[in-house]
Length: 280
Image 1 (cartoon, rainbow, N blue to C red):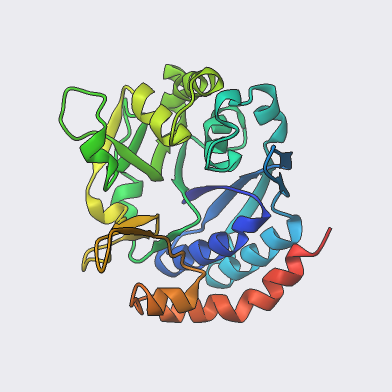
Image 2: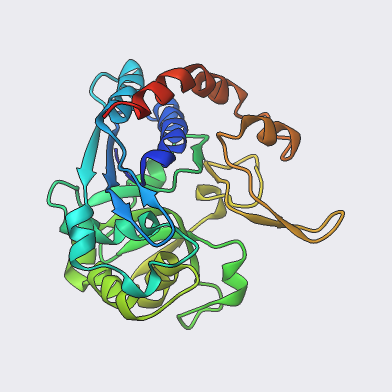
């Protein structure tokens, strides 16, 4: 199975947790592609995921299947050649838009599952991954909040969350979807740049059931649980952001122990992960 991550060195904790969870539920080899880059914005300097970090994660997934691998891709030249100028000051990092350059990377296969780094795989997903993609650019789940606020087709609910997207790059290259998104983001400022551009410009998308990107809470049939910022209404209206690597907050604020074995495995690897981050 082909998996796509996009991020900098700071995303490594999430990449490790997601990779460990995938390895637990996928019987065939995992081919994980990581698009990364070095970039400096007006707010921050970002360092790319380094080789030592990729090797550590690859070592862990190979323990489950020796044929699994992780491939680092420096996408900086592609990004700088066509930067999303109007959205570089977004509250989201430039890496949220990096997947929109995947169609330019010849080594990335046509069928690939993009995952944010705050996703945990809970069950096998063969049926989702191997669905027929003829004439389809991407498959995703409705955004928990955005589905009520935005829509771009004739149907009432059609606004996808971009945290879990099954991509058909062959179709995307044919329709020019990612190229159109890159051009759009160079001139149009959007609140959620990549997600909004994809929803506005995609012509051939398929909506999958909630269980493939559960954004609000765990259900019995959850396959991928996503941990974005959510709204809470007790004891007052507020937002809450808890990520899987914040283990104590997963327990104390989300009261979630479903992934304790996975997170124990992650915590045991933290010293090695920190050591890998220091390698230049």
